[in-house]
Amino acid sequence: MKKILNFISLLTVSYTVQAQEATASGVDEDVFNITASIFTLALVMLFFLSVMKRLLDHRIKKRIVEKGVPESVASALLHVNPKEDRNSNIKWFTILMGIGIALTIIHYTLPLGIHSLAIMAFCVAGSFLSYFFFSKYSEK
Image (cartoon, rainbow, N blue to C red; front, side, top):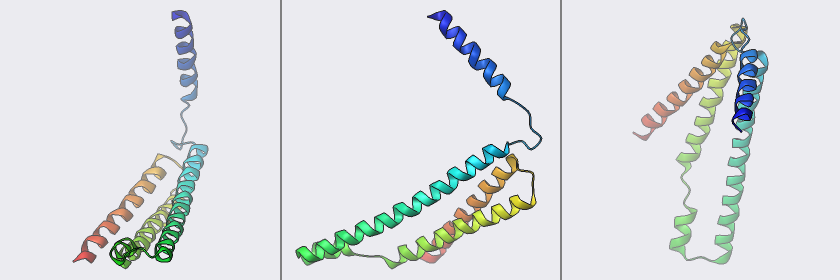
């Protein structure tokens, strides 16, 4: 058993050593494309989840009204805060604006590298920060 583990670890180490090829750009273009694809897929999935949440909320509210639930319970469940919807739209606007700015900067600072991921991270973080300040000052 010990020999098998040593052999597997030796193969793993030699494989990782071969995989550590130095590139001029820092990050391989395939890695960047995969990361961008995963990020885009995550955004699309979040969009579908929010649409499904809204549809299911609508169905629940419709059934509450049809069943004739007491007014106090119905008003507590059907209470809609329009401020949350408005802030949700502004949040998505700031996130997508940050991504757009990041992609524009990345386009002008080719070749793709680790700096591209850093630009994307800083722009998205900046968009979340701007949304935080907006929501903080809009409450006042």
